[in-house]
Image 1: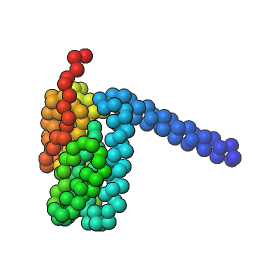
Image 2: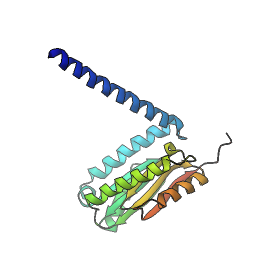
Image 3: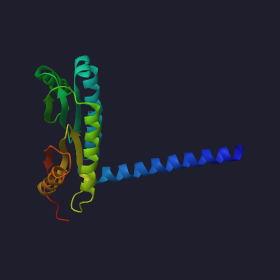
Image 4: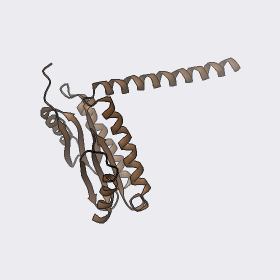
Length: 192
């Protein structure tokens, strides 16, 4: 009996290691395929944490709004809902005070925070859009972030204009998408 328990524990441990190793390999491949430098990728990740922390540390924003921010190449996309323009402006000034260095794309809508069911539907829309993009042989999904908020799909990344237009077309023709907002930075096509 002890042997079976030890064997089961070892199998679970090894399965966890294999999963972690696979996630690390996929994450590493995504990082290497990204046009941003490793430093910029790490800066964006740190900025995401700073943005989340700043928004959550303000009690008014935390209790009355549903706002989040995503950093890409030093620029920030703010999305969500605030019940008043005063609170929306407070969220923007809170992020500006972090001095992250890039542009802030303010896409916060005035209104009540969306319901849990809407957020769940948004997650499903994001999954469908990403899946459709993965099936396209021209697009490189490792260079595009897809975020959905209340049926609006936001596309971020460093892409060529052709890739950006293709990604927007795929997203806009996905069931449940009300609107597509491109927040891309464009790069010149490589001649490889």
